[in-house]
Amino acid sequence: MAAGAWTDRWVRLRGHRVLVRTSAAVDGATPIVHVHGFAISGRSLMPTAERLVGTAQNLVPDLPGYGRSEDWEQTLGIPALAGALEELLDVLGHEKVVLLGNSMGCAVALELAHSSPDRVERLVLVSPAGGVHNQPFARAITQLARDGLRESPRMARSAVPDYLRFGPLNALSLFSELTRFPALERFLGVEVPALAVIGSRDPLMPEPRRVAELARLADGQMSFVLVEGAAHAMNFSHPGELAHVVRSWLAGVPIVDDPDEPGLTRVLHLARR
Image (tube, rainbow, N blue to C red):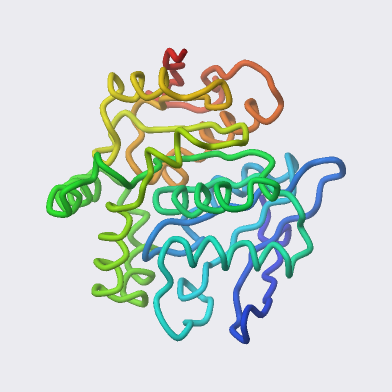
């Protein structure tokens, strides 16, 4: 999508400037809000967001303290980020949205869906990190290091400056909070239609067999898709396939592999109750 199709919009939350990248509105379609992971900015989500232009209006914020948005007085934890995201929706005038999170962005999206389910029409959880599979903290650090070797080197051009700006101590503190987040409880208790998308090469996710077990525990509102060949940052590495999955799910049509996306990526449906 051409760069001119997007507008950088600056809004104020509690006196601080927050950046929101915005595409054109689409009549009759609920806006999609993309929620980035810890220590990184919304730039990492743009490859997928650009491919969803025309499906709905896409909003890609840099959450407070991330990317080009101003720092707040302290680093916000997951519940506080969910609260700030809801405030942002109020400022932007969106009563209901589709939330599309990646990594820690899934925890923020789940927290908002838990506290204010009336604000969330649907929920897309891409590589939903956090909770028992990422415990203890040393295990999570090892998983994160393994994932770094599996991601596209091209991502470093945006990720490294974001990490340096956020700061290593802030990143470690928030990552530790993410490992303690009650992801499973929020995951199984979600009250809105939700789609979980995981990559077969993501070391921060349970193996597909365990995901299938979780699928059987989830109620009928939760759907699961496995993208073969993807690691954790699927929004950046497999944007075409992910956008195709999201479009299909939002439209209520069967999710199948996108023949226009070359490579080894395939979409598999995991059995659920």
